[in-house]
Image 1: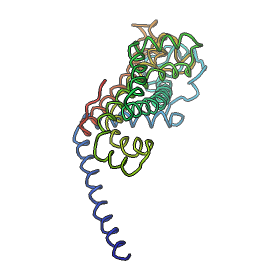
Image 2 (image 1 turned 180 degrees about the vertical axis):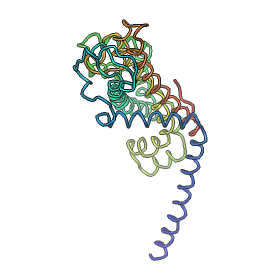
Image 3 (image 1 turned 60 degrees about the vertical axis):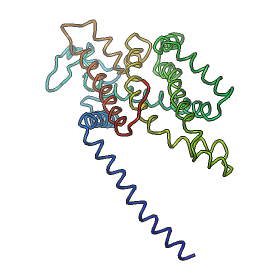
Image 4 (image 1 turned 90 degrees about the horizontal axis):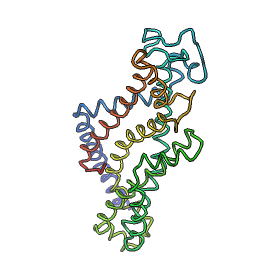
Length: 301
């Protein structure tokens, strides 16, 4: 018994440094890609600014229905780096809080779409037969519809709110993950480790979530990162046409739409919120590209 315990501890001492070395090499590979590090930096800064918005925003009281018409249409200054809007509200403050809404949209949409799509895809790919056929035909039906058009149809059928916009976008986002997970599961189900688990008496849930899913996480994680930017653009598009975030909430798409009527003279009212969308989307895209190179996977867009 003592000998077995000693061997176990010795194995742990050997495995742990090897695992640390693997993580270190992966980090070095990722860190040697300047664009990936820039993307990680952008996403980190935006997330921290959104989380701590009440402490980093210059004028937190000006987020909602605040008005200060005496300071309306102020161009960028030291006091208001992004200028002020038609109600005299600080645009930088509203952009920071707008990031909160955009990141919340990403969290809800991907938080619903990824688990649903991955679960359906794993079941279809591993089970095969008529189950695979039914799941993938339903998935193909949704994929045949233009995503933004379907989101517009759902959003326009209800009162335009942030919650409706989240539901509209989430209703179509699971499809790509179902297709991705199905392909990954179908490629893994004949591997020796899966057959060994089946011979050992493991049930379907164990095989799916303890054997197959861990080997599919890399491409799924890369797709999540790349999709975050697309979700933000889709949400901003809905808000831009009035089917998403409603005033006085500081939605980035809504702010861009409200500022277009003042172009080109008062350009800052719409340009800075639009640039904020661009920065966050490009940050997620660069981060996703870095992860794709790190894991050496191909992800269908």
